[in-house]
Length: 91
Image (cartoon, rainbow, N blue to C red; front, side, top):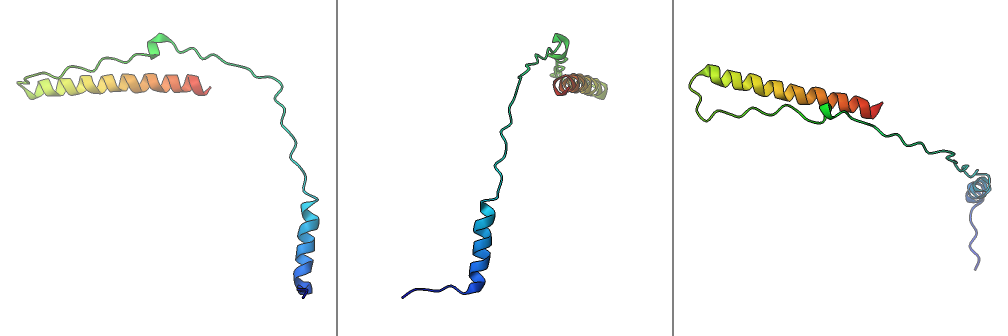
């Protein structure tokens, strides 16, 4: 017994088969020249200020405040240098 598909199914199937033959193959991308860039980062940007040593015994609040100021300055130094390195690498 032969199974007959309704004509409504043959038309979309025939169109799909015809259109698949019309697809274009993407062209190959040829890279003509590879250029290497050496990024030189100055040594001054490769080291940060040392983290201050916390006092073993802080007598006054002033001692704690001075430590926190020095800690914040060391962190800012590293963030500034990292931003400069990032600009060098991304350019």
